[in-house]
Image (cartoon, rainbow, N blue to C red; front, side, top):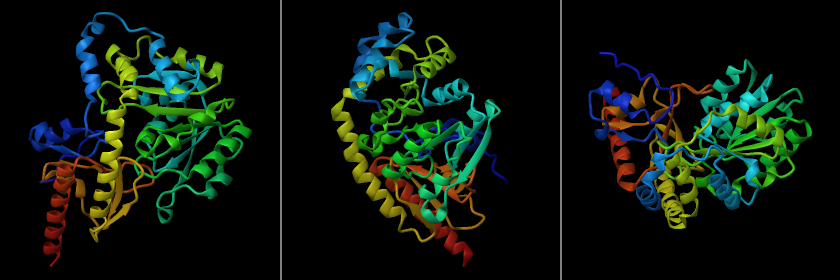
Length: 367
């Protein structure tokens, strides 16, 4: 019998897959969403428990305390920060404020850039990243950044490929976009995992065409709270962005989270220690499968290609109650590409054991 396909276009849709399979959500091991497996920081759990009364009143609609905390952390001015209900809300707010007529997207890339641009009836120019170059942008991109572009989205590390664009190349792109008055939107949703030294936030000073998007939901494991922010120095653009937002777009506990977790250095250090160990471990183990082409990761997820033709690896792993992200719905990719989150050692081992059994069975079936 043909399996019913899930309709969700993003990872983390465990409820839908569990319902299709007729199993409990708790029995499904989710590798499809790139969330820190260390879970919510204890500092935040304590802060929420101690301040449950925040639910009894409206949050500050300007989020002054949160923006001040973010400004101190990034050494910038608080007026240059716009906070939002996750980075996705801000993607749509940016395109609404800019109203671009022509934009460039690197593919494969995050789907919400395209949806936001399409909402503005914007002409989209796709720049296909080369598989031969590990889906990594190179200097060939430069000649395609034409002066008639209104904006360019770049995600670094890229989703879903996990590649971090070369820092020198990215700085060159920043300069070119500034000279040509092209809004460059850099999505740094996963930069916390790669390292703050790779962030371009320091470049926003006196560059009104550079927009940095940040997410706090992945690194601090709070996707249900929804918290992101944006940095830019163009006061007119920032004013238009704030006009696009609905009042109280962030709830009180998400606002509290943003003020607490950035200074939880113990949690941040523990996350980086975990990632250094498990990123290398899972990459090395996945690379041992002859049927997989595995791309070196720069964040908390690993992108790979399954070389078995006419084979649904996501479906096969669901038989083992493991959900991975199929990347077939990303422009520029097909159903042979997948993405897995990096999790704790016991979960990573469970994935590897299931993969080994699947590949063994497939090999036996072919014989």
